[in-house]
Length: 255
Image 1 (cartoon, rainbow, N blue to C red):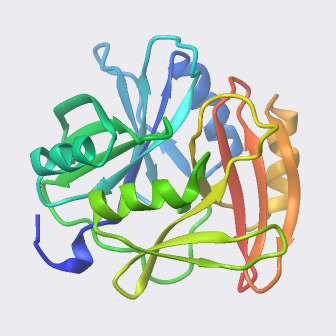
Image 2: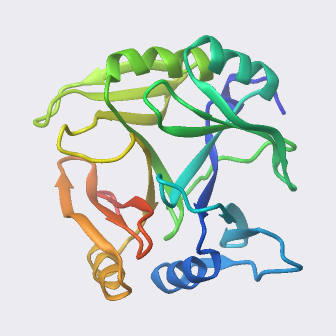
Image 3: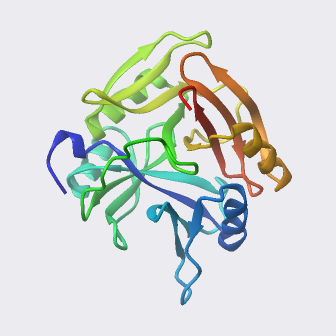
């Protein structure tokens, strides 16, 4: 892929990793009408997700584990072997790969020092950034919940070349990762009351966020935090599908 600074450090692909592929595909096509999910073909364990004709991720098979189903984001790098070395040197662990994601690129999957799963990918072709209004169903933001945010920031700066800053909020400091002049991802302290391992949360755009939240409940999903306002930013809700994969809904204040 291109060596330009604008090409690296971007989340460009998301997998829903689950042991319930067919049921999950049905759930999400009902929840997000813009999601068109490839039909299963010849036992292929990967079913791509398309929005407005563009592949944005996939639902892939995974054996049931203590972690349960989850969304996994892929961040662009120039070389996955080098990324793997940086991950290990910064205190992370490569748990899969290097492997080929058909038609997309070479990748490695890793856990960060807190245990959250993230992937690095070198794409076969540069994936253009979205421009114009955000379509419903698009992945629009990424945020990691961390036990030790200040220490974890150094890991992601070393691995993906992001810069790091924090901004004050009524709920405490919000950590922001940037690639050049553009925002790349966010980070928040993991609540002490939260169970399970730290996790990256994928945000999915929903122009009718209240209606989408209601639809999710109707389909058997769980609302962990109902639609809430972030002044000057927009609205979000923390939810999970009927099988336990957690993610967020988001609507920009700008519409």
